[in-house]
Amino acid sequence: MSNNDNKIEDKIKLKVYRENRGQNSKSYYDSFEVPYKRWTTVLDALLYVKGYIDPSLAIRYSCRMASCGSCGMKINGIPRLACYTKISELETSTIECEPLGNFPIIRDLVTDFSLFYKHHKNIQPYIQSTESVETAAEEKTYSYNQSPQDVDKYLQFSYCIKCGLCYSACPTVGTDLRFPGPQALAQLYRYFADTRDESKNRLNIVDDRHGIWRCHFAGSCSKVCPKGVDPALGIQLLRSYMLGVSKNNKKQAEKIEVNLD
Amino acid sequence: MEIQRVLKESQIMKIHYITGIAAIFVVAIHIMMRLVVPFESSLNYDYIIANYKNIFYVLILESILVLISVHGFNGIRVILLELRQNTAWEKVITVITISSMIALIAYGTRTIILANGL
Ligand code: SF4
Ligand code: FES
Image (tube, rainbow over all chains, first blue to last red; front, top):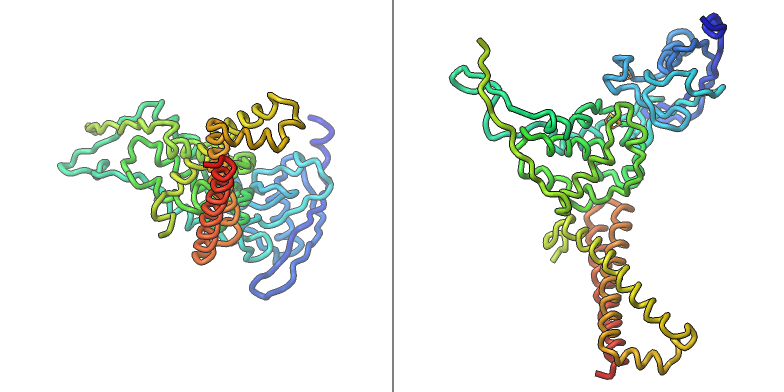
């Protein structure tokens, strides 16, 4: 065990953005000194502040393990998950926590995701099939036969936890709120590339003035994604389909009967 | 009639990319034709008028005019679209960019025709 592990009382300065839209108050930064250990995350530090120093601090979190996507915020200027960012890895003496950019602020570090979810919902994020398959008639159960290669086409995109970090980092969203944003576009690719999906209309949803063509390919979305999704890649793949550069040779998944006995 | 109703955004962008790539080739030919004579004499009045009489050169100039105008004005439309998001603004910039594009192509073509002495 190193000396570092024995040190209990290392302290870090947290500089936290404060604002309450409801009361039309002016924004300001609060500073807190927080003890930390090698494994303390920024979310732990913020919860320490909430628990022991200032209970009025507003933060949103749930799983504390980079699964629910609720604790996104700008940490030292970069959109990150607070529960997935260790203080010791940041290597700065002051840590600045601000709400995610491109989202309206509700209070302190809590932002409004309504428009983000609206864009997500708009791309019809579900498999569309002409038949109901998994629970079909005659008490038979059906399943779709997908090869590992078919799954690979969309797998990384299905890891999205809707944390909004990519949306926050996107420069086009910053100027055009009707642009669906990297998350929605990557999800559109996820369902488009899925062999179980039979939708013919999916691409038309984003083929308009404020749609997929407004991506500048800054690539910041892929840089900040905590789940290894590459939304910029999804957008470029969709575009190449729409331009006819790559052929849509998607074979529909084979429907097979599953015997549960 | 609204251009968006006539062409889908993907079709407009296809035209945008094709005109952009094609413009690189014709501008390269145009520059190379300037370089076959010493640069100063390439700007000589008589030389330029002689060029305008060359049908191959005229075709290059006309295609540069059309390709750059279509690509450039659509580029401006795309940039302006991002500034505001309301239908009135979108209609205005679509009309302005398309009419400017047509006006520039018409004026440039007129110049080429006059210089050619057709
Ligand atoms: S693509 Fe990545 S950054 Fe964007 S919402 Fe999904 S998980 Fe978050
Ligand atoms: S608390 Fe769930 S992702 Fe951070």
